[in-house]
Image 1 (cartoon, helix red, strand yellow):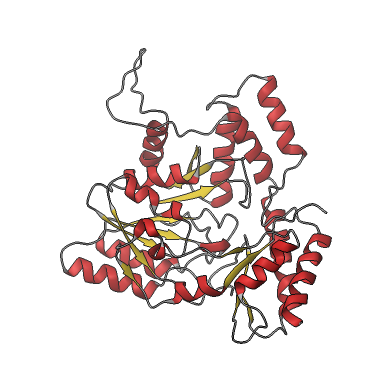
Image 2: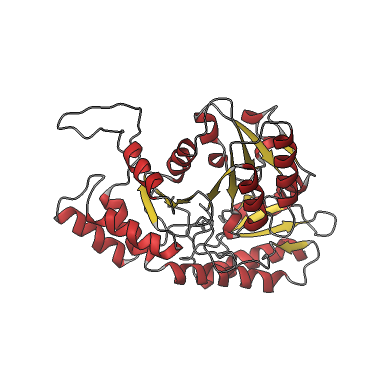
Length: 375
């Protein structure tokens, strides 16, 4: 039997048709009709006036931070429970990350801690330059109280919505509320372009500057002239064609992932020590990955035993993100929290939930887990 992956790409005929069109018209460079169309369609999908297609979500975050004015020595607050790419671009600019703990209601950054940190630092005359607010595993953070505090103290709010395309925060899309939002189209995301990302913003000038910097910051001249350092960050027309096909199926892909989550939740509802990731009252989660907690004192197995048992069945599963304040590369970095993200990491497990996963494969995962949990 083939291996069951955590979140494999889910590709269809529309994507192939767009790729063939790009090849047949020779639009394979980081320019072309698919890019322009993808940006327009994506902006509409997330309710943001401007979208800039880029080579990765990391590139989008790097540009957003630079255009927010982040520079050497600045402090940038960042969710601790997230992938390293949420914080790495802060260091590209010589700035210093300050990691903030999660709350238990959504596993996202704790608004009370954020507010306390910003107020304390502002009172001392050193308000953070920006905040990278991550929307984790398809669930929006509680944005409004965080944005209110950021606006009060001039902290630029940048939303990392790499895992939350298709989610909602009240009646808005995560990523469309701050100064800029970033999305990822890596192979395991809700939609994929094989590799790629998008920066969205309501600021027309910021979008213009992002395109300028993403194309090596070439000045308007018949020759190659450059007055500032730029980057090679634009998405190819081929990848944009894949993204357009994927985006047209966004609702169906989200619905499928939510169905996987519901099936797992039903299967484990009476199993001691198993707790599914909650869905916060302020918005709908995409359930990008199905995440659960394994309490070793109540369950018959520990999280790692469960993961290793699934691996023996050729089923991929992973611990949830190791908090960034625990990462060796950020040793000594300031962290503000109460240990919530540490506990979530110790007990958290992500199980297969890709939109292309069959019911039969899901049943195999569930059966394998139940055998370990009930033996």
